Amino acid sequence: MKMAIIAANGGMFDAYKVFNIATAAAATDAEVEIFFTFEGLNLIHKEAHKNLPMPAGTEHFQEGFKKNNVPPVDELVSMATEMGVKMIACQMTMDVMSLEKEHFIEGIDVGGAVTFLTYAKDADVTLTF
Amino acid sequence: MEVTVNKTLDAKGLACPMPIVKTKKEMNALEPGQVMEVQATDKGSTADIKAWAKSTGNQYLGTIEEGDTLKHYLRKASSEEEKSQTKHPHVVTLDELSKKIEGDEKITILDVRESAEYAFGHIPGAVHIPLGELEERFEELDKNDELHVVCRTGSRSDFAAQKLVEKGFNHVRNVVPGMKEWTGPTNKLH
Image (cartoon, rainbow over all chains, first blue to last red; front, side, top):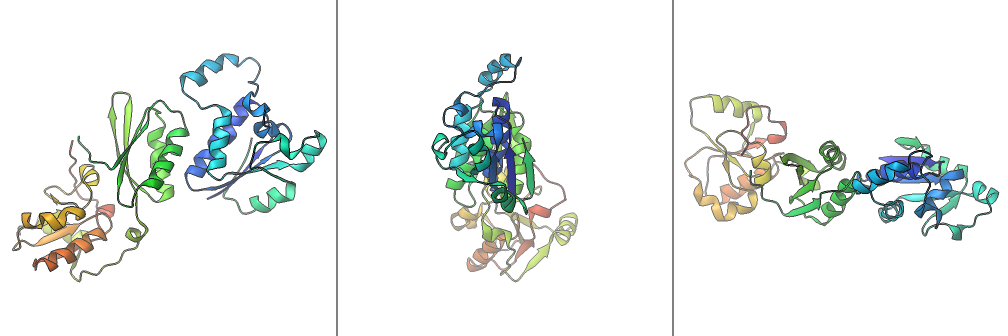
């Protein structure tokens, strides 16, 4: 199975949507690539991804995450990397936001829309979060 | 029900997708044919483990619930096993076997799968000796009996049938394909 994901939002819930599906797919022997664009870049930003905002009014769910032993986002991210999930930061968004490759976690690539499309054109599953 | 396993993975208290991620990691370390018990409390894990096994070509044996804990049993499949290669010349189909069971003639069914596979469903009355133990235990069988050897796909039972012929058994038949497609009655060790 080949899976292509676009991550375009930068909240904590978005991080779980993206990385839960990505790690589950990688564990099921799928080839996974994620394209991070606009706010989605937060999910792989060295500092930002460790402290992502929860949607307004949902802060009380914090307890639910703890109670159910949901791993922190940075742990999921390193697990995804370890399992071979390929992550691509969007060059154009980085330019707009004055971000450099060093601002992101280890092991990511930088690319444009065509980089992602070339990979995604024959993917079995394509998701946008 | 007691199930013999080669490895136990404790994934209790972990939320999705962690039980699957851990299962994948541990499964990589197992030898083909070995059985793993995955203990989880995530209620979604039963459906997930089943689907995972199907996608990855491993074998899901079943789940036992103990209080809040779900114990899932998985067997690592080997690539050779999926190819059906038959070398023992005398084979019997599942239909023929069904008819023989219903008939008057006394027949012996020998199940050579692992204990966990046998525990989750076998043909009623089948004698159980895992392939790996056949070398030491073949004397438990009667050379005069008509032996019908069965496994999951017909591959391990083929090895077993050949081994039995080597030991001087003359009435040995390999059941093809095997329990994978058996729709007749089964017993469980509950």
